[in-house]
Length: 581
Image 1: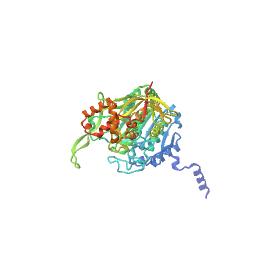
Image 2: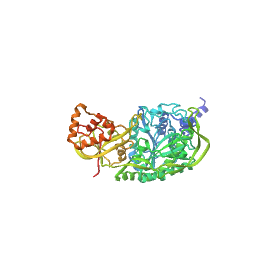
Image 3: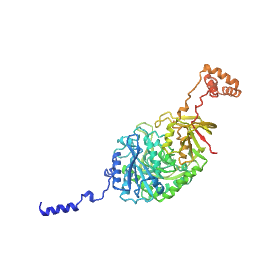
Image 4: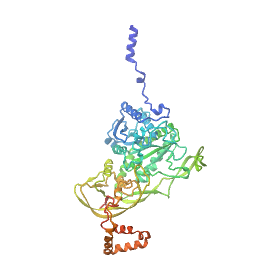
């Protein structure tokens, strides 16, 4: 080699770097490289966060359990202090948890979160000092792997996406109480580790056509009650709406209608505990679902979701101390209450008014069915005052007991209490308690399958007091704990999403003993002779009920149900209430 060439080569080795190393990495997402038309696959999403975690000490990715798909569930954490011990974080900072891909066809949040973490890492966004950001990149991994381009019939992009059902075909946003999936149990683990102050679940919907790209579905504020509910309704929600509007994003409450026009008015969606925000609210976490409009272009929807996350992160940072104080006060507030609302109805005495930006709609004759059909006209936008029914009142309340007692053997219930970090005692010796017990008086049942169950509703239970002996292995569950609301919503049979209504106790609904008429005839006669009140009631029922008087078996069965041989466990709810002294 000539001397000049050799010197040039050496200098190049010393000073020249490959172009990609000398320039800052941009960490471009699949969404960006596709010009807003594609969403990242599950593996591309995990790989992206893994790359960020390697490059930036402020970002951490870890697995925290499995899913029905066999793949692990991840959480990704951004903390400006590069500290990821949640036992310490919860004492020092507020936590914002984002859940993405619960319905993987609604992928907007998956891509928006990737952009948010990248921009935080590159300091395109001012790093929060008092708030830690945690995200579940893809919650429904099984659905994300069932990628297709057809299952979202009305959706405008992306090119391909995941499927709503998980690997066992469950809708995971109906599983937060019954816990039929491994996904749900891993979520419980994540939630109780992270202990979020604020929770976001990202979705896409289309109940009607309107001008907004993004809508919000906050947890129903009356359910939170106390000062925390006031803060959500009077400060957090209007502040978020105003900050988004100031940044060019109009937002409205979730348009809770189906096949009708929104200008007629609509109620706030009641997020019962089966839903993510209803579940997280049981621990006083301020929750909202972002619902983008599926008819808007995908690029626009992702940007809107990104902006909402960014603005809510700013709000969390500003109010971090206030939110933590309100949540802690709310826990104490519930522990001092004597009653708890189990059922709700819309408050017809008050409502809000929205300046709603919609599109005019016409009712035409369908060329398919020949029946009337709804058709929106985007060439006729309007802004109208629309009633929004967002106040609820309790219709059924219950006295809060000192504790619940659960008979041994109901392992599915005990497993869920454990997964939700409920404190309880397993009795080691027999104890007798004066308790309030429930007899299931009536209930109705869905006639078609719903999320792997035939749930009950309109359940009515009769309470009575009795001294009952509880034996080793039975469970004593005190209510003086942060899981109070979870206990009331699951163990009170009349609660909408109670374990009873989700079929956990259906074995008590079937008689296990009966009678043979030819034998019981003589026993029934003797019972009527020995008990004048029973006889009088029997004769009165025959007189007043023609169907009863014409049915010999119903008459014998009525007498049987009033007698000691009657099945003692039929309709007897195996969860007992230890009332306060």
